[in-house]
Amino acid sequence: MLNENMKAIRKSKGLSQQELAIKLNVVRQTISKWEQGLSVPDSDMLISISEVLETPVSTLLGETVIETEVDNLKAISEKLEVINMQLAQRKAKRRKMLHWLLISVCIVIAAAYVVLTLSNSPYLDWDYSDPETAVVAVGFHAIEWLFVRLAPIIFIGAIAGIFLTWKKR
Image 1 (cartoon, one colour):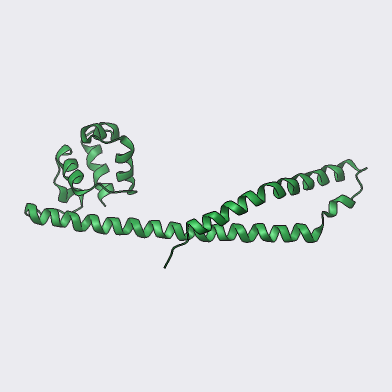
Image 2 (cartoon, one colour):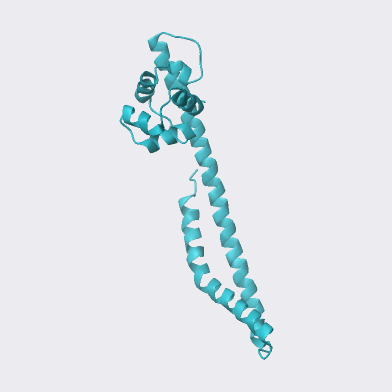
């Protein structure tokens, strides 16, 4: 809500992200992150944004009720807390998805190694006098050769990723 309101008000004032960033003494990427909902400004910065955009903080946060300044700061901090919790939940969900994706990669690589080991490169017994068979066999060999060299690196990286994304309970 904050991100959408901030973007709409900035555009209605005719300001670019760069112009707003200069007025707030931040980099443009910070404005972009706020407007994409990837992060939120702290309460002091939220007040600065409201001053630059000439808009009450409550309007930025989506409220139309005017409260006293003390209540306003409390409401702002509560809303920011909710937004931060939502961002934390989104981050935890992405971390969990990445964790299981890395586990899946490890399983697929291990299964492919088992299949390659059990198949024992059957294309080596093919008749290479036929050009089409030779091309297909060379293609199979190239894929197998590339897999055998790259898969261990990817496997080790995936294992490291699994440990890095492991959530301790």
